[in-house]
Length: 363
Image 1 (cartoon, rainbow, N blue to C red):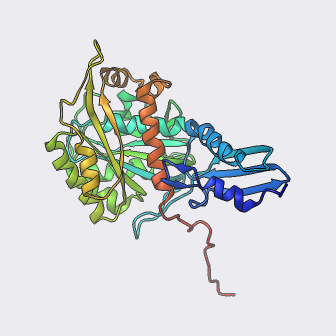
Image 2 (tube, rainbow, N blue to C red):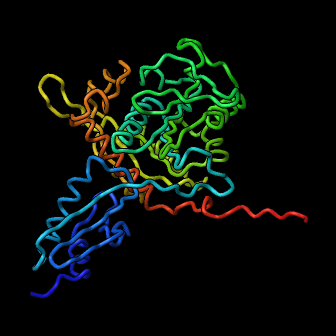
Image 3 (tube, rainbow, N blue to C red):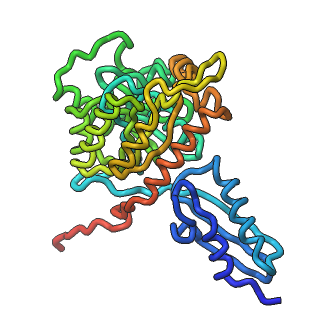
Protein backbone atom coordinates (compact mmCIF):
# COMPACT_ATOMS: atom_id res chain seq x y z
CA UNK A 1 0.00 0.00 0.00
CA UNK A 2 1.44 3.39 -1.02
CA UNK A 3 2.12 5.94 1.70
CA UNK A 4 -0.28 8.83 2.07
CA UNK A 5 1.21 12.03 0.61
CA UNK A 6 0.92 15.59 1.87
CA UNK A 7 -0.49 16.57 -1.53
CA UNK A 8 -3.35 14.07 -1.10
CA UNK A 9 -4.18 15.58 2.29
CA UNK A 10 -4.07 19.12 0.85
CA UNK A 11 -6.40 18.10 -1.99
CA UNK A 12 -8.85 16.58 0.51
CA UNK A 13 -8.77 19.73 2.68
CA UNK A 14 -9.49 21.90 -0.36
CA UNK A 15 -12.84 20.13 -0.74
CA UNK A 16 -14.12 21.89 2.42
CA UNK A 17 -15.20 25.52 1.88
CA UNK A 18 -15.31 27.65 5.04
CA UNK A 19 -18.69 29.45 4.78
CA UNK A 20 -17.34 32.50 6.63
CA UNK A 21 -14.12 32.92 4.63
CA UNK A 22 -15.96 31.73 1.49
CA UNK A 23 -12.93 29.72 0.37
CA UNK A 24 -11.06 26.58 1.35
CA UNK A 25 -8.59 26.77 4.23
CA UNK A 26 -5.53 25.86 2.14
CA UNK A 27 -6.16 28.78 -0.24
CA UNK A 28 -6.94 31.03 2.74
CA UNK A 29 -3.51 30.08 4.22
CA UNK A 30 -5.16 28.85 7.43
CA UNK A 31 -3.59 25.36 7.24
CA UNK A 32 -0.34 25.79 9.18
CA UNK A 33 0.90 22.23 9.34
CA UNK A 34 0.20 18.83 7.77
CA UNK A 35 1.95 15.89 9.41
CA UNK A 36 1.91 12.47 7.74
CA UNK A 37 3.40 9.38 9.40
CA UNK A 38 2.38 6.16 7.66
CA UNK A 39 -1.41 6.16 7.85
CA UNK A 40 -1.56 8.77 10.63
CA UNK A 41 -2.37 12.34 9.62
CA UNK A 42 -2.28 15.49 11.74
CA UNK A 43 -3.63 18.82 10.48
CA UNK A 44 -3.21 22.14 12.32
CA UNK A 45 -5.57 24.94 11.33
CA UNK A 46 -5.30 28.54 12.56
CA UNK A 47 -8.30 30.73 11.73
CA UNK A 48 -7.94 34.50 11.65
CA UNK A 49 -11.31 34.99 13.31
CA UNK A 50 -12.86 33.76 16.60
CA UNK A 51 -15.02 30.68 16.00
CA UNK A 52 -15.73 28.75 19.19
CA UNK A 53 -19.20 27.82 17.95
CA UNK A 54 -17.90 26.58 14.59
CA UNK A 55 -14.49 24.99 15.32
CA UNK A 56 -15.80 21.52 16.24
CA UNK A 57 -18.04 21.26 13.15
CA UNK A 58 -15.23 22.51 10.91
CA UNK A 59 -12.75 20.01 12.39
CA UNK A 60 -15.29 17.19 11.83
CA UNK A 61 -15.76 18.15 8.16
CA UNK A 62 -11.99 18.27 7.55
CA UNK A 63 -11.47 14.99 9.39
CA UNK A 64 -14.14 13.28 7.28
CA UNK A 65 -12.49 14.34 4.01
CA UNK A 66 -8.97 13.30 5.09
CA UNK A 67 -10.20 9.98 6.55
CA UNK A 68 -11.62 9.08 3.11
CA UNK A 69 -8.11 8.98 1.59
CA UNK A 70 -6.97 5.41 0.89
CA UNK A 71 -4.34 4.32 3.42
CA UNK A 72 -5.32 6.79 6.16
CA UNK A 73 -5.86 5.01 9.48
CA UNK A 74 -6.04 7.90 11.95
CA UNK A 75 -6.76 11.64 11.61
CA UNK A 76 -6.23 14.43 14.14
CA UNK A 77 -7.45 17.93 13.24
CA UNK A 78 -6.61 20.84 15.56
CA UNK A 79 -8.50 24.09 14.94
CA UNK A 80 -7.52 27.28 16.79
CA UNK A 81 -8.06 31.02 16.26
CA UNK A 82 -5.79 34.05 16.46
CA UNK A 83 -6.95 37.60 15.73
CA UNK A 84 -4.45 39.86 13.95
CA UNK A 85 -4.32 43.66 13.75
CA UNK A 86 -5.55 44.95 10.39
CA UNK A 87 -4.86 48.15 8.50
CA UNK A 88 -6.80 51.40 9.00
CA UNK A 89 -7.30 54.68 7.12
CA UNK A 90 -4.21 56.51 5.87
CA UNK A 91 -2.74 59.02 8.31
CA UNK A 92 -4.45 57.54 11.38
CA UNK A 93 -2.40 55.55 13.88
CA UNK A 94 -3.72 52.45 15.71
CA UNK A 95 -4.38 52.94 19.42
CA UNK A 96 -2.64 51.05 22.19
CA UNK A 97 -4.60 48.12 23.57
CA UNK A 98 -6.94 47.79 20.57
CA UNK A 99 -6.28 45.51 17.57
CA UNK A 100 -9.33 46.27 15.41
CA UNK A 101 -12.16 48.81 15.49
CA UNK A 102 -15.54 48.03 13.92
CA UNK A 103 -18.01 50.90 13.53
CA UNK A 104 -21.69 49.94 13.62
CA UNK A 105 -23.67 52.59 11.76
CA UNK A 106 -27.05 53.37 10.24
CA UNK A 107 -28.27 56.20 8.09
CA UNK A 108 -31.32 56.81 10.28
CA UNK A 109 -32.52 56.18 13.82
CA UNK A 110 -34.99 53.53 14.91
CA UNK A 111 -33.49 50.59 13.02
CA UNK A 112 -32.16 48.85 16.15
CA UNK A 113 -28.50 49.70 15.55
CA UNK A 114 -27.53 49.85 19.24
CA UNK A 115 -29.23 46.51 19.89
CA UNK A 116 -27.31 44.96 16.99
CA UNK A 117 -24.06 46.58 18.21
CA UNK A 118 -24.27 45.21 21.76
CA UNK A 119 -25.34 41.73 20.62
CA UNK A 120 -22.57 41.70 17.98
CA UNK A 121 -20.02 42.59 20.68
CA UNK A 122 -21.37 39.88 23.00
CA UNK A 123 -21.43 37.35 20.14
CA UNK A 124 -17.76 38.04 19.28
CA UNK A 125 -16.96 37.56 22.96
CA UNK A 126 -18.92 34.28 23.04
CA UNK A 127 -16.87 33.13 20.02
CA UNK A 128 -13.68 33.61 22.06
CA UNK A 129 -12.49 37.17 21.34
CA UNK A 130 -11.58 39.95 23.78
CA UNK A 131 -14.13 42.67 23.02
CA UNK A 132 -14.83 46.26 23.97
CA UNK A 133 -17.79 48.51 23.14
CA UNK A 134 -17.69 52.30 22.88
CA UNK A 135 -21.02 54.14 22.94
CA UNK A 136 -20.41 57.05 20.54
CA UNK A 137 -23.97 58.33 20.73
CA UNK A 138 -23.28 61.30 23.02
CA UNK A 139 -26.82 62.73 22.79
CA UNK A 140 -28.60 59.42 23.36
CA UNK A 141 -26.29 56.89 25.06
CA UNK A 142 -28.08 53.56 25.42
CA UNK A 143 -25.33 51.03 26.16
CA UNK A 144 -25.37 51.53 30.00
CA UNK A 145 -29.07 50.50 30.06
CA UNK A 146 -28.52 47.65 27.59
CA UNK A 147 -25.57 46.27 29.56
CA UNK A 148 -27.39 46.69 32.89
CA UNK A 149 -24.66 48.92 34.37
CA UNK A 150 -25.06 51.98 36.63
CA UNK A 151 -21.61 52.98 37.83
CA UNK A 152 -18.99 55.63 37.16
CA UNK A 153 -15.61 54.64 35.66
CA UNK A 154 -12.54 54.83 37.90
CA UNK A 155 -8.99 55.93 37.13
CA UNK A 156 -5.95 54.09 38.52
CA UNK A 157 -3.33 56.57 37.30
CA UNK A 158 -5.31 59.83 37.25
CA UNK A 159 -4.96 60.04 33.46
CA UNK A 160 -6.96 57.22 31.89
CA UNK A 161 -10.35 55.78 32.80
CA UNK A 162 -10.78 52.06 33.36
CA UNK A 163 -13.52 50.58 31.15
CA UNK A 164 -16.64 49.27 32.88
CA UNK A 165 -16.86 45.47 32.76
CA UNK A 166 -20.18 43.81 31.90
CA UNK A 167 -20.67 40.26 30.57
CA UNK A 168 -16.90 40.08 29.77
CA UNK A 169 -17.17 43.26 27.65
CA UNK A 170 -15.01 46.33 28.28
CA UNK A 171 -17.48 49.22 27.92
CA UNK A 172 -17.29 53.01 27.86
CA UNK A 173 -20.10 55.55 27.42
CA UNK A 174 -20.87 59.16 28.34
CA UNK A 175 -23.93 57.58 29.94
CA UNK A 176 -21.73 56.19 32.74
CA UNK A 177 -20.86 59.77 33.76
CA UNK A 178 -24.20 61.55 33.59
CA UNK A 179 -27.66 60.76 34.93
CA UNK A 180 -29.82 58.74 32.53
CA UNK A 181 -32.38 61.56 32.27
CA UNK A 182 -29.89 64.43 31.88
CA UNK A 183 -29.91 65.79 28.30
CA UNK A 184 -26.54 66.57 26.66
CA UNK A 185 -27.18 70.11 25.41
CA UNK A 186 -23.88 70.42 23.55
CA UNK A 187 -22.82 71.87 20.23
CA UNK A 188 -20.96 69.79 17.63
CA UNK A 189 -17.33 70.60 18.65
CA UNK A 190 -18.03 69.59 22.29
CA UNK A 191 -19.57 66.31 21.13
CA UNK A 192 -16.63 65.39 18.90
CA UNK A 193 -14.13 66.29 21.62
CA UNK A 194 -16.06 64.13 24.11
CA UNK A 195 -15.97 61.20 21.66
CA UNK A 196 -12.20 61.54 21.18
CA UNK A 197 -11.66 61.65 24.94
CA UNK A 198 -13.86 58.62 25.58
CA UNK A 199 -11.90 56.72 22.95
CA UNK A 200 -8.34 57.80 23.73
CA UNK A 201 -8.60 58.25 27.51
CA UNK A 202 -9.98 54.77 28.17
CA UNK A 203 -7.47 52.14 29.26
CA UNK A 204 -8.53 49.42 26.79
CA UNK A 205 -6.94 46.12 27.80
CA UNK A 206 -5.74 43.99 24.87
CA UNK A 207 -8.99 44.20 22.89
CA UNK A 208 -9.29 42.13 19.68
CA UNK A 209 -12.36 44.06 18.52
CA UNK A 210 -13.67 47.41 19.73
CA UNK A 211 -17.27 47.88 18.58
CA UNK A 212 -18.25 51.55 18.19
CA UNK A 213 -21.99 52.16 18.43
CA UNK A 214 -22.38 55.28 16.27
CA UNK A 215 -25.27 57.74 16.42
CA UNK A 216 -27.52 57.71 13.32
CA UNK A 217 -26.71 59.93 10.35
CA UNK A 218 -23.57 61.23 8.64
CA UNK A 219 -22.65 64.27 10.77
CA UNK A 220 -19.87 65.53 13.06
CA UNK A 221 -19.38 62.32 15.02
CA UNK A 222 -19.06 60.16 11.90
CA UNK A 223 -16.60 62.64 10.35
CA UNK A 224 -14.46 62.69 13.51
CA UNK A 225 -14.49 58.91 13.54
CA UNK A 226 -13.31 58.78 9.93
CA UNK A 227 -10.57 61.40 10.35
CA UNK A 228 -9.15 60.74 13.81
CA UNK A 229 -10.06 57.23 14.96
CA UNK A 230 -8.37 54.18 13.35
CA UNK A 231 -11.38 52.26 12.01
CA UNK A 232 -10.71 48.82 10.51
CA UNK A 233 -14.18 48.30 9.04
CA UNK A 234 -17.83 49.29 9.23
CA UNK A 235 -21.10 47.40 9.51
CA UNK A 236 -24.29 49.06 8.19
CA UNK A 237 -27.57 48.24 9.97
CA UNK A 238 -30.86 48.75 8.13
CA UNK A 239 -34.43 47.45 8.04
CA UNK A 240 -36.05 46.20 4.81
CA UNK A 241 -38.14 49.38 4.61
CA UNK A 242 -37.37 51.62 1.60
CA UNK A 243 -36.94 54.76 3.76
CA UNK A 244 -34.37 53.01 6.00
CA UNK A 245 -32.55 51.62 2.96
CA UNK A 246 -32.38 55.10 1.40
CA UNK A 247 -30.57 56.47 4.46
CA UNK A 248 -28.43 53.34 4.86
CA UNK A 249 -27.07 53.97 1.36
CA UNK A 250 -25.87 57.42 2.50
CA UNK A 251 -24.03 55.83 5.43
CA UNK A 252 -22.41 53.28 3.14
CA UNK A 253 -21.28 55.96 0.67
CA UNK A 254 -19.87 58.06 3.51
CA UNK A 255 -17.57 55.22 4.59
CA UNK A 256 -16.51 54.66 0.98
CA UNK A 257 -15.53 58.34 0.65
CA UNK A 258 -13.36 58.27 3.78
CA UNK A 259 -11.78 54.94 2.74
CA UNK A 260 -13.17 52.82 5.58
CA UNK A 261 -14.06 49.36 4.18
CA UNK A 262 -17.69 48.33 4.65
CA UNK A 263 -17.67 44.74 5.92
CA UNK A 264 -21.32 44.25 5.08
CA UNK A 265 -24.98 44.94 5.77
CA UNK A 266 -27.16 43.56 8.57
CA UNK A 267 -30.91 43.60 7.98
CA UNK A 268 -32.66 44.06 11.31
CA UNK A 269 -36.39 43.45 11.89
CA UNK A 270 -36.41 41.43 8.64
CA UNK A 271 -39.53 39.45 9.53
CA UNK A 272 -42.02 39.67 12.39
CA UNK A 273 -42.54 36.43 14.32
CA UNK A 274 -45.81 36.34 16.26
CA UNK A 275 -45.13 35.52 19.91
CA UNK A 276 -48.51 33.73 20.16
CA UNK A 277 -48.70 31.55 17.04
CA UNK A 278 -45.24 31.75 15.47
CA UNK A 279 -46.60 33.17 12.19
CA UNK A 280 -43.92 35.00 10.18
CA UNK A 281 -44.73 38.20 8.28
CA UNK A 282 -42.61 40.74 6.35
CA UNK A 283 -44.20 43.85 7.84
CA UNK A 284 -41.36 46.18 6.69
CA UNK A 285 -40.96 44.61 3.25
CA UNK A 286 -38.69 41.75 2.18
CA UNK A 287 -35.15 41.37 0.88
CA UNK A 288 -34.19 45.06 0.94
CA UNK A 289 -30.87 44.50 2.73
CA UNK A 290 -29.71 41.74 0.39
CA UNK A 291 -30.69 43.79 -2.68
CA UNK A 292 -28.73 46.77 -1.34
CA UNK A 293 -25.71 44.55 -0.65
CA UNK A 294 -25.86 43.26 -4.23
CA UNK A 295 -26.29 46.76 -5.66
CA UNK A 296 -23.20 48.12 -3.85
CA UNK A 297 -21.15 44.91 -4.10
CA UNK A 298 -20.80 44.45 -0.33
CA UNK A 299 -21.56 41.38 1.75
CA UNK A 300 -24.97 40.61 3.22
CA UNK A 301 -24.05 39.55 6.76
CA UNK A 302 -27.43 38.26 7.90
CA UNK A 303 -31.05 39.00 8.79
CA UNK A 304 -32.40 39.38 12.33
CA UNK A 305 -36.15 38.91 12.93
CA UNK A 306 -38.39 41.39 14.76
CA UNK A 307 -38.88 39.35 17.93
CA UNK A 308 -40.33 40.72 21.18
CA UNK A 309 -37.70 38.79 23.19
CA UNK A 310 -34.86 40.88 21.71
CA UNK A 311 -36.53 44.09 22.90
CA UNK A 312 -37.47 42.70 26.33
CA UNK A 313 -34.04 41.20 27.01
CA UNK A 314 -32.07 44.27 25.90
CA UNK A 315 -34.33 46.70 27.81
CA UNK A 316 -33.85 44.62 30.96
CA UNK A 317 -30.04 44.95 30.75
CA UNK A 318 -29.37 41.38 29.62
CA UNK A 319 -29.10 41.29 25.80
CA UNK A 320 -30.22 38.22 23.83
CA UNK A 321 -26.76 36.64 23.36
CA UNK A 322 -26.30 36.36 27.15
CA UNK A 323 -29.99 36.03 28.11
CA UNK A 324 -30.54 32.95 25.93
CA UNK A 325 -27.07 31.84 24.73
CA UNK A 326 -28.26 28.56 23.22
CA UNK A 327 -31.37 29.98 21.51
CA UNK A 328 -31.97 30.53 17.80
CA UNK A 329 -31.65 34.34 18.06
CA UNK A 330 -28.25 34.12 19.78
CA UNK A 331 -27.10 31.73 17.05
CA UNK A 332 -28.10 34.29 14.37
CA UNK A 333 -26.03 36.98 16.13
CA UNK A 334 -23.08 34.59 16.53
CA UNK A 335 -23.27 33.63 12.86
CA UNK A 336 -23.20 37.33 11.90
CA UNK A 337 -20.27 37.90 14.31
CA UNK A 338 -18.25 35.09 12.73
CA UNK A 339 -19.04 36.48 9.28
CA UNK A 340 -17.94 40.03 10.28
CA UNK A 341 -14.70 38.80 11.87
CA UNK A 342 -13.92 36.48 8.94
CA UNK A 343 -14.41 39.33 6.43
CA UNK A 344 -12.06 41.44 8.54
CA UNK A 345 -9.46 38.66 8.70
CA UNK A 346 -9.13 38.81 4.90
CA UNK A 347 -8.28 42.54 4.92
CA UNK A 348 -4.66 43.71 4.81
CA UNK A 349 -2.75 43.30 8.06
CA UNK A 350 -0.98 46.06 9.95
CA UNK A 351 2.70 45.21 10.38
CA UNK A 352 3.77 48.54 11.89
CA UNK A 353 4.42 46.92 15.29
CA UNK A 354 6.92 44.53 13.67
CA UNK A 355 9.26 47.26 12.45
CA UNK A 356 11.61 48.93 14.94
CA UNK A 357 11.73 52.68 15.45
CA UNK A 358 15.00 54.09 14.12
CA UNK A 359 16.52 56.74 16.38
CA UNK A 360 19.49 58.79 15.17
CA UNK A 361 21.75 60.04 17.94
CA UNK A 362 24.80 62.28 17.82
CA UNK A 363 27.72 60.55 19.53
